[in-house]
Image (cartoon, rainbow, N blue to C red; front, side):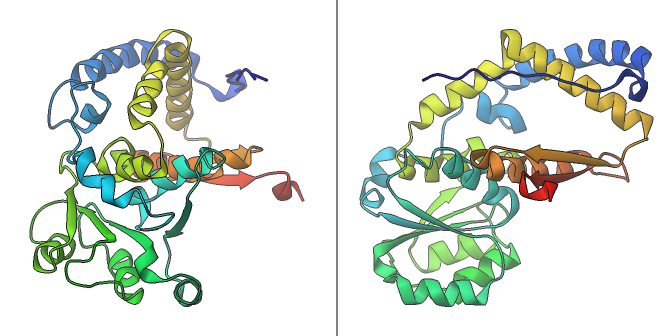
Length: 284
């Protein structure tokens, strides 16, 4: 049975600056046209949406990793939230088990070590900068670092950072995360798409389907939502943005959105504090 999604904005007019909204719509169109141009400009943050964008790995190099049925992802923030959102959303189609290490939890690590044999688990260690302290802490706490290990994939920028230097010293499989793509925008780059490929998903279709939100009715909804939020920010009447969620499959997506939204707009005492509220339990 197919179900239709209905997009709707319901913000009372008294909370909006309607004159500003008209100006913002014109400004939005300028930004949107500039964004479409930037999609095809290399070394731009949005280039990962372009049809011309090429991933920094060969599928032939990944075949040896496809055999693993248990995969552990180690990361923080934008380096893991997007991947977790993809897994959570497509979990019913994914035949593999994914475990996410995105906090400092000694008990979780010990239980993991008791339950799983290390050589039967594929480990992703992802840090855009290559020096995220919590990611490195979990990496070393799991005690999986061995020279020429065949079950570790490291993803980071190239340079004088611990993860890249370790990949060279220990002869580990490393994939470059492009410097021009910010961590919170990295879900459609190697950071999110390489794990998605190991999940068994068609990453080409995943990227293509996301581009429909720049077209037709979806484009209009994007414009309306952006201008409404901009007028609310300008009015400075609200500080919080509550993301009320009734769909369990969207929980991790909203946590990814929370980080993306807060880090992008929460600068210089501006923007909202986005909070995820999972219902119906939060009603009680």
